[in-house]
Amino acid sequence: MGQERVLVVGAGAMGTQIGAVFALAGHPVTVQDISEDALERSQAVVRKRVGRLAEKGAIEAVDAEAAIGRMSWTANLEDAAATADLVVEAASERLDIKREVFARLGAAAPEHTILATNSSSIPSSLLAEASGRADRLCNMHFFNPALVMQAVEVVPNDQTSEATIETVLRLTEGIGKHAVRLHAEVPGFVANRLMMALLNEAVALQAQGLASIEDIDAAAKLGLAHPMGPFELMDLVGLDVVHDIQVAMHDMTDGDDPAPHPDVQRLYDAGHYGQKSGKGWYDHS
Ligand SMILES: NC(=O)c1ccc[n+]([C@@H]2O[C@H](COP(=O)([O-])OP(=O)(O)OC[C@H]3O[C@@H](n4cnc5c(N)ncnc54)[C@H](O)[C@@H]3O)[C@@H](O)[C@H]2O)c1
View (spheres, rainbow, N blue to C red):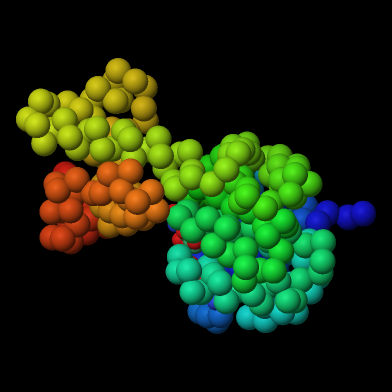
């Protein structure tokens, strides 16, 4: 049997690179989106990013061309699903959109096809009923940029079969990623939970006037060997993204996980999102 055929739903920032990762590992890949613009941009991004890997000598030029040649782009979900062995959904982060996509995938994909969602905050259990195949469904959470970041969190819902998880773990290893296997759903999975614990503590320390944001960042970098400090990280990721993740985790745990700290809320309300808006914890203007 050749390499499993992969359908990636959503040709945005994540879907495009997830598709390229599978194609580089030899899988035939279809990337689907409802937006023709997104499909065009996605093709251009793949050419650029995969081309750059070859320029840097990370891969051979012929392998780059072969990988790009294994990819196709379409607006037709049903046709693409009909031949897929694995679907990774990376469409916009909205439950209503994902439910509709999974209902259509569940109807159009062959029986054996595994459906995974790359969602950062929507657990696959919320898509189980729509998909009609809870046992062949899980979260497969890539990190941004997917071509670079090595971890993939693999998260079962309470009906996901062991066979499904084993297949997803094998596929994850096959694309050269490290699978972080969770044993049950938890808001934020592992990486975002770790990150939020760090960020919340950093924000609390500065709010209590115990140290400056510069010194807290220095402690993380020069004391813990983190590549960047928590305040630099928030400015890079975006205070809007941090805020939204914290709200989602707070809501999903019925308040067990903290709501955004008042200082994060204040920056968020002022539109001070960090690098993307020119100002966050630091001034980037
Ligand atoms: N950006 C990140 O850092 C990151 C990291 C990990 C996971 N995620 C998750 O990945 C998913 C996608 O995020 P993104 O940053 O790539 O978003 P994005 O906005 O860049 O791309 C989303 C794409 O989905 C398309 N889309 C919307 N509705 C659709 C539908 N019904 N069918 C097919 N395509 C549809 C949009 O046209 C768009 O091109 C989200 O679930 C997000 O939580 C994002």
